[in-house]
Amino acid sequence: MQREAVEDRDRFFCAMLRDLGIEKGRPFAPSPEQRQILEDAALLGEHITRVIVYEKRFIGYHYRTDARWQLALVVDPGQRQDNFDQLDERSDWFYEAIGSSYAMITTTPGVGSICLSTYRGKDGDWLDGAKPYHLRIPANPPMKQFWAVSVYEMDSRTLFRNEALKAEVSSNSKGLQTNADGSVDVFFGPTAPSGKESNWVQTVPGRYWFPYFRLFAPTEAYFDRSWPLPDIEKA
Image (cartoon, rainbow, N blue to C red; front, side):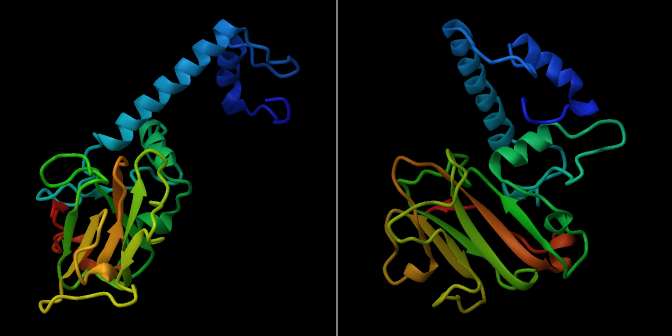
């Protein structure tokens, strides 16, 4: 507040901050009571945002109706619509991630990338780091470059930290095992299925997680939704 210029778009926000004792040219010195109120408000704000993120209610953002996968990026990078700016959509993405670009919401086959997310397994339960799971990626994923499944911790929204030092399985993974029909089985859990370490991401008990499924240079079968991506299931 002290070092930044006040833009016209920020003036109403500055008025709100002024009521909290945050004002240009004025030291911020909250009383113990005010400090507690602000800390409680910050925690409540995070709870509201977590609901926006992990229980998405945006219309039309499911990849298909036969599984839980959704478009992870629901905000337009410009954030401006005809009659409003995207508020919940912005909260959703920038609580969970960092940057956005039009290349990440490509509408042109063979260009850019897309990212799908899910937070629950097929049974509707949250994805639990103490339990083993399985995802079968069908043959012929619609991409020209590569696909990747990356695993993130729900609390920190960072790549999962584990003893294996690996949070992703991709079509470029060394030693990736492919089934005879061209599908790929990806495993998640505290321990790897015997002989499947190359197709496994280690999770940790006590921590919940979510995956991003990315297609780089997606092809037409993604855009017309003819390629299915099934739910993650308990193994």
